[in-house]
Image (spheres, one colour):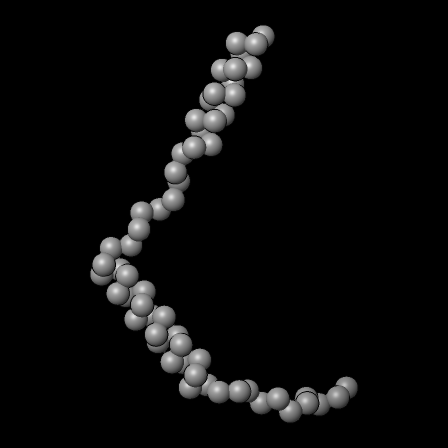
Length: 58
């Protein structure tokens, strides 16, 4: 029984140590992501505050 528990714990620890992260982006992909982030930031600044007037009451 003890050997089975030890084996199961070892297998569980090995499975828990796996690195399932996706690979890091390449330099070109990183540049594209930075450009997209800059465009989103510019668009958010251009919009400005929305209409904050109260809507019609029911």
